[in-house]
Length: 386
Image 1: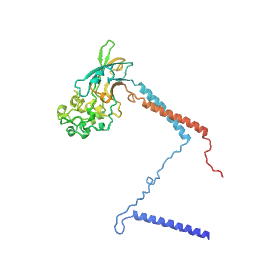
Image 2: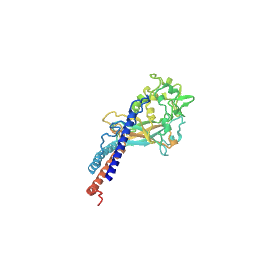
Image 3: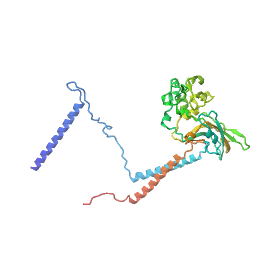
Image 4: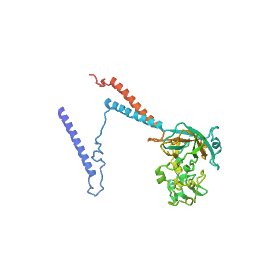
């Protein structure tokens, strides 16, 4: 009796499964079929296509982490990263760099009077000189930077305060700049060119470098002002309005200079290839910095011949036309002389990072190897006794 009842139960279950499967197939056929007899709309099935991608049947590789694979990986990473880090660190240390602060906050500083008496409203520039000496010669080309501290060029409203269409030479934007430039959009009922807070705060100190001969003679170091901006900025992003019209005085006649500027944009340089919106000092400044302490390329000192260094060791004088006040935001100004290498300027962080990561991986490899050697042969099975 029991066997028959179990057979009936099994048969009932089998019949129920067959009926369910039949109803599902009929429903799928109904949804995926053509229009019904009454000409109704076609109802597509929501069932995913029977493809390897949609049904998640793509071939996959799932590595099994064992001591034989993990330990060699740690040692290989350590052995690769440590030499690379040492090479980067040594290369960075071989780059020669000299930095001098000329803010003038100290009473003994040559620029103290300029720092305390100069402001944006000053009409007469203040001049000062800072003397320094180089203990070792600078070979190859030398790059002169100006540096600012506590200047937040990454502020959201500051970064947006510009009109790229105006800077690209659009005539409509020249006289009707974007509202993003407020409150430096108009002045004296005329559009400001270039408009915005970035252009209004253009760094305008003038730096001149002199070498002092042993006999006391001052020799001026030639500073190259072209080639300091990115090629794409100089030839693509920044354009003077008016096309081939080189008379920028006429082109900008219906505009006003920025509030803090001492002269209009068409008087930035006497060279027509470096004047107006395509002035390279202006272009370099318009590329905003990400951090409040930054440096920007000011000039290039090119090496004249391979027999003599670009900057020999000795005494130098930096003549400064102090036009840029920084006391209002408690900032500091500095001048940097630096050489470069294949990895760029002096920056030991990348080498230190590689050495640190490589050392940590190598140390973890040794620790895991000791643990595996000591405990790896033990049985980890969790058999339950009978």
